[in-house]
Length: 239
Image 1: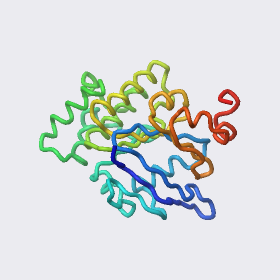
Image 2: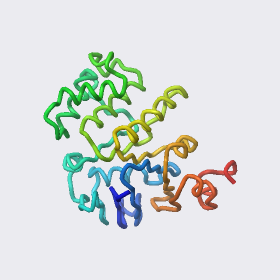
Image 3: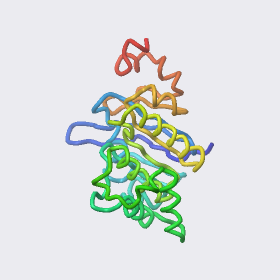
């Protein structure tokens, strides 16, 4: 598979603190690529740099085109969507209108209404499309945020701890949905997650970050056997 995203020596500092430090990695097209690490490791900061929210040093290439100097809306128009740890929905708008904003913002097709309806069906919220987002439970808010991201018609989506706060049943449903996004829609996924069993089950490759630096990258099996990963993150159960 061709490389969809490549970072080269990405660094983001806040004063003297290097939240992301000289980080280089690549992601293959149509891959599910997992990212994990301790709290404060720099995972969300990395997403903020990739998506244009933060500027940093180094280089980010998307299908070989440099994007690290673009603003967030320009990154989105290139085909990169993003979700957040806390659901970012417009609380006074309906599910339909939240997804409509995504379709309008990043849409490259002519039939906006079809995109919205297709997304609603895909995420399973067709029957709830007229409910204001403020009345939704957490899981449905997360689905609405994901739906808005999908409505931009991305080729790459960044998921930041998408299953945090969910029940075991909702986690299982989310995992199946992520697999469908990857398999049926052909969208590349980079996902940050603390639940290692889930991350290892869905990722083709994984990267572990500690103190803003890459300490291991490889298959889930390779990562689980890495001595440094076990020491700083996984703990004795993986030893």
